[in-house]
Length: 499
Image: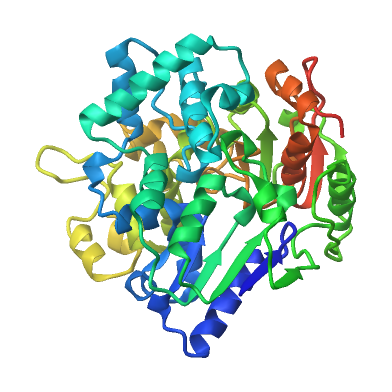
């Protein structure tokens, strides 16, 4: 029996699946006979946390790739990694940044460098296999023109390299499972973010879930934005189900944001018709104006469509020393942010978590004998015994905020954040309110305010002309990350999305 659950933005799709999962367990279904497939590793961790169970208790709560990896008994050394891809590129004399452009392994747009044409060819390689189409057809999605003969040479070189080295990439895991895998011994199958599955992934789902008596597929075709990578929302749209349930209340989207979002989504020609209600908050839509003049006192996403725009926006924030998480920011490091928060907590709240204090100590240099003018000698042994420590237990004497700059030497990685601290505060730097990220990276997340940069490259603009539905979905996702307010930037270039 198949149940299809359609969940608009902020309607609690994952919460609903968790509720059904708990009902299944309460009704006697053994956790080890339940498979819960998540779109990303982050979603898997969230789902596992919500169940309140150990990983060993629900062995099939994994990403699709992870299920295939474990069922096929693949060795870790066999998997193609960004480092191996980079080495492959150097070996054959082409430029590969090593950043995998596959959203299902959560590396999309994480590279410091912009993707090269060979990165895009690797993306096309994955897309073609996910869509089960020929190379020439897959190349139609490329945002730039690449000679077909060169693409064939690249594809053959990449395949031969993997065969010679005995490597498998993440898409190979799926194709191998479809060919050699066997159904899981389960009673219930959950599929989260089903609109973002590719035809190849659906083949995997059909194999591994063949024995399941009850199946739940949850998603929203309006939020299907990974078409470029091989996803096909039409499969979810046309999925035959015994029951269809539409979640009709958003717990995120305010009234103003909802109104703009529905205006955008109404432009999509091919979609499942659905209605949902916003929250009681009125919210707001406005023009962004000059970003550096904004007061970022609430969690804010600044969303861009193309790499080059993200770089420009991030540089503006760096030049103004406004704390942010994003390309080129020293605050990207969780170790640095945790260290800053530990210092703040110790001198202001007189107490901090031990795991955060450990990170702080790693940035405070000691002399050749391991001693330090600031830190008590026995602090590391206390960290092993206690989950929290007080300021008196950590410091020989309580430092002032300004003594932070003396405590952390020039050689430390934390030195790079000092200009931010001088202009803002340690707490602002420990907990940046601003995150600069692509619209695709923001999928599944939310913020009080979302600032959208509508500018795009000529290639994306041309793609929008040919397939406007896909771009409407992308911008719909951007808008619906906002809980209260959407602010629209004025584009600098000639190509942009019109709201």
